[in-house]
Image 1 (tube, helix red, strand yellow):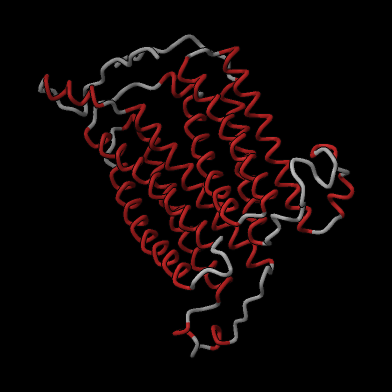
Image 2: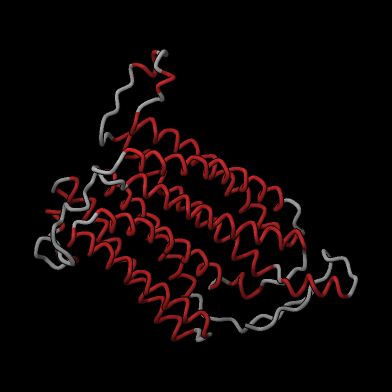
Length: 343
């Protein structure tokens, strides 16, 4: 088996893509805290902070100020850091690696950062709950986009060999389907968190039921995907690890979802006869409620990230052309490895 690898390129695009992903994950965490504490309007102006340049706002006032101000301004600082890193990534790719598709991907990351920042600014300027929900939906989408960039800029991407495997083709489709379902689930969760106070009770109930039904379907789908990953050739063993990591995160997410419901809405009524449930009182914006709810949101984005990494890696490894060639040549599909076309 052989592969055609391009000349060794600069490591900086990959390093900046990883750095951008590492900044984006806590950005999602803090954004979840902003929603949990309803702190989106703690700073009423934008793009500045109380008349100051965002980056020049006195750090003493920020650290010693109200909690709402602390998390909202911190959210903005993390967003600015993501923007700076996205600019650095685009410039670095233009200078060190001019493959058109990678240049386009780096530009796409910058466009998404700018769009997300503009949504956040419009949410503050207009004090609009729908814009807050859209802002919360674009964040995980950008995080998933970065998952693809992290893989595409890595040395693994350049050195990967194509494998012809029918089970690999099925896993690829399952991984992309999983990523799509996870994102829809995150959107439904955003709807649940941002239902207007004056909305009819049926809207919240419908969104919650859809969220729960899709969660059950997602658990079954991810378990099926992990089982398929176990049937892959030895050279694709890293995908097995990603499959079981996704399964673990899904199970953690189910536990966080149940804990979130209890923290926000109390135990279900049918548990009222038990002392541990009957005596439970929901404390709005308590530390437990904030951490559990925000962890549920952030872990959902992490699941999307892992599913996207798995999907992109599987797409790189398993090509449809290789499987078709195996059928034409009447060669066992698990053993044929055509050369990868130079990118």
